[in-house]
Length: 461
Picture (cartoon, rainbow, N blue to C red):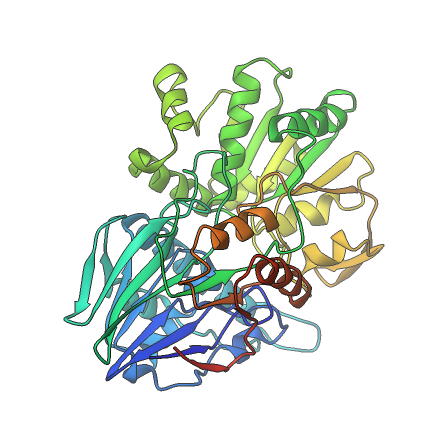
């Protein structure tokens, strides 16, 4: 049995791992690597022949895990894509949104260039629909046979609705071997989502490491942080709070948290705009799979109704309504995508508010290197928007309390639940080198063998 790490090696995006047993090739995730300015060009080729992949297993919908599936299909992959039911629905939304982003970048007119001269789209709507037709959904905690020698089981890990670790059991040369891929591991007590479930004993573990070396803030709660920020920005002063948030996952958790705050009367009413059509569609998926949400969320629904709908909240639909928000002169909260500021309606709100002293921009998630969000977080005094250099007068803040990833202690605990006598090796992926080294040191200290793979590195298991 052979494992090759083809993505998310010493970086966070582009998850893609190839597991090969005798005459059977399994691809775990097929995400976009978007940590480079040339990411569309970087993602158009694969280091293997797509037609030789027998099956794809998708851990969850986020685009750094799912975003290159249509390219794989376009280039000859003809097998099934296995995932949980919510992952299938959310992935379809995200892939269609990716096409819109590709086309927007291609058609964007830049100085000295004609419209349509931007990078060619990786794939089109047709390729997304061809991909969706290959989805085969499997419920959590159910064994599923890929062939007589290989079976899988999806384990809930929080992080996002439908997100799963995959445990593969393989018969290899007469011996049974088990390997688990964590995907992205969530955290306990996260809004709306269930807590990560313990991964059963395995021989090999491929683990994410995003928050290696870092622990989440524990001196305040999410509700306390939001109340403090809203009070400072929108109550004491007539300002506006802009929260860049991924449309799927982060927005639903944030809306539910705000619902609790305002329904409990912790703040005077403040108008809230969710300016993302994708977020509206995704919220309907959350409603569809309400039985998979955590107990607190389901209890809230029984007592007070829809977690994602309340009086102060408006879901913005068309572009005209979105533009009109700039003329709303009362204090307000604007939740818009994309979370890293690399496109979407959030850029319109930034353009009109980045030089507003009464505006606060609150980041609630990770921003990859090279993104506009990363530049604001590192303190760049000037940013470029709509071909203009704009001074940053708005207040920039960040909180990790809505991060969907488990921290160092959570990741370490996920490993140490395994028996060090039987777990042969841990492979750390989906993390920056510094984070991986820190986590690896703690795992080794606990008595486990660890590897931090290079991209394309091959391991015989």
